[in-house]
Length: 391
Image 1 (cartoon, rainbow, N blue to C red):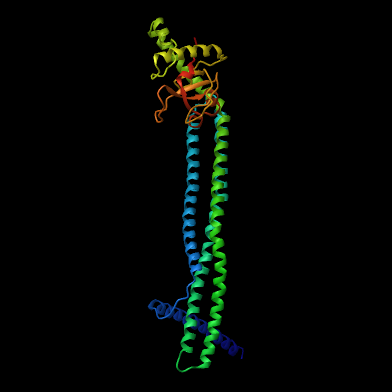
Image 2 (cartoon, rainbow, N blue to C red; image 1 turned 90 degrees about the vertical axis):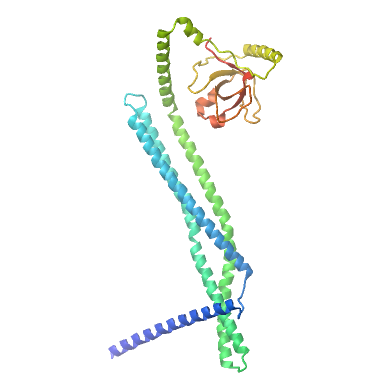
């Protein structure tokens, strides 16, 4: 008896499953038939222009989001590669750094500090940028599935409507069939309108959310990058005395070796001629009268300028040191701002053009503190400065 009940249950389940499959198959057939009739122009498709616009915006939004996410991932991976390259470069520098040189301990500390900053930068990029884009793009799959479901329900609605219209317009009316068709139509209409209403409300909100997502992401990238570079610069500035000590020692050693060799090979008079002070450069376009006035003014100004404790040694890579004879309080164009008495380092920039009678320069105190020619340098008129010599 128990076996009979079990067999009956199995048979019932099989029958129910077959019924569900048959229903699904019938729905698929009805949808396919409705689409064919619509393409042939025999039935009218229900159109919703507002929803179609929202759907087009969704497709564009998804494409833009996926593209941006890929670029964000590429940026993040590039940062990781840069971290590894920086670590290998620092390790190579450490390996070739001779043990008897000063600052071995400082070099190790700087390397460890930079590695920590790189790790922190990577972690925050992952949390605040990559994950933000993952969450943003991850919501599109669910929405697209609901849009596809809405499309299927629209076909069901059109199919039920056309079936009801066909029965109502038939010459032989069958009230039972019409009643059943009306019931199916009302059900299909209710299902379609519910999902259509939800999507018409949600899609514009989702489309508008792209703005806040992009703003947040780009702000995070900019802020993290600025903080990283600032902290990395602080680490390097903390090791600046070590760099300057090594550079000064190497420069002094080279200078002594060069001077000794020249003194052995040349008479004293030749050495004196070589180290004689070079006259202050003047602009070639100035007339003789202007040149006389300029020289007189420069001479008068130089008496008022008092520069104390000046290091006459010219840093490597610069043309010469000079002192400002007057204030330059205009930064129009690429002019360098300075005050009377400021010490200025001049240099040559072959990539940038400059007016005749001018040189590129940077204030010595800015160079010592920041070592940045890109942001802190500018053009200086040669008539406003005087070369500093040890005489």
